[in-house]
Length: 185
Image (cartoon, rainbow, N blue to C red; front, side, top):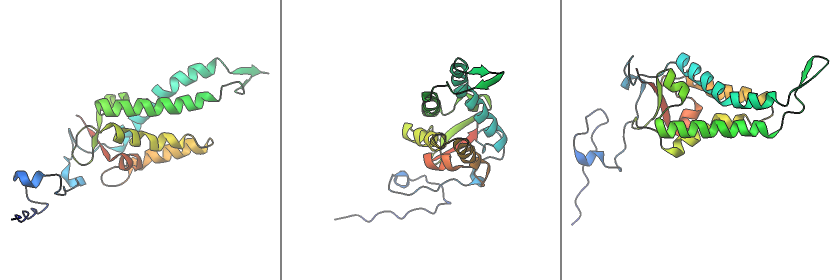
């Protein structure tokens, strides 16, 4: 004889019954009021997020700028960038995706987020993002850089800035990766 399935508890009731924690029972997704107003695990404000992103961009771009410096020439005192190799842009894109994917998947944060006291968490349960989530989160804005410049730069900056809006500050990259950025201190 088949036993009837237990009735799902309301989303507002605590789930103490082990059967309620089974994978086939939908979980309530967190809302802004589910996070503390300040301190650890509060929603990351736009200012620290932009600061962390800026620092990460400097870390990724610095090696490329050093390499490019060897190829810049001057003519009549005007710098010429004609000799900078075309592969350098693709190397920066690849480095950005790899850096962000590995850092977020392994530690839940990049160097910039660590310095600014932020971490990336899975939206559904607060754990460190899986590698596929970290990759999707990184690919969305870095892929915009592959567009012709300055459109690519503007697109990437626009995608990153979407984290400043909404009650949860979940930008398009966070939504793509199923993540959210919270504070650590």
